Amino acid sequence: MYVLRLSLLKQVALTSDHVTYPQLCQEDEFLQLMPMQLVALIKRDELNVQDERQVYNAVLKWVKYDEEQRYPRMEKILQAVRCQYLTPDFLRDQMKNCDLLKKLPACREYLAQIFRVSSCPLPSPSRCTK
Image (tube, rainbow, N blue to C red; front, side):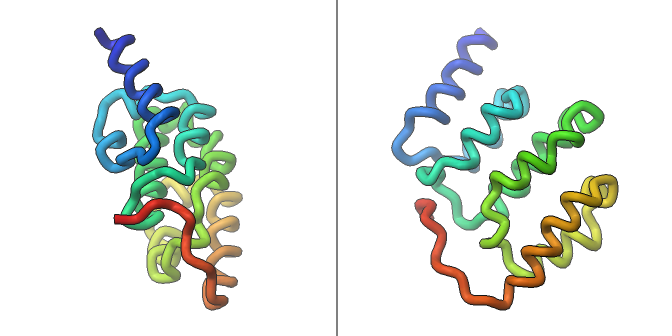
């Protein structure tokens, strides 16, 4: 049954027209995704999210599930998140308070670069928002 549920999660993540991302992230199987599967999922334009914080927080949850094995991959995964749509306040808070980012200077610098340009107006994200 576990293999079947994981396959169903992958199938939904890869084939749904409008993936309900917050619901997928609540599934235990989400935490079992391989790094490439996670990146493929979070890059999808069809993700149905309120804002990009949901994607960012789900990535943190995924990394923390097996932190020692996964944190070295976070830089590549974080680049798949549309961090340019995170608010400056959220970015500032993450850079200051996120313990995981404190271990990963490259990720912290990546967010700092985005923070520095966050005063420039950006076009609306192309994800589905509800």
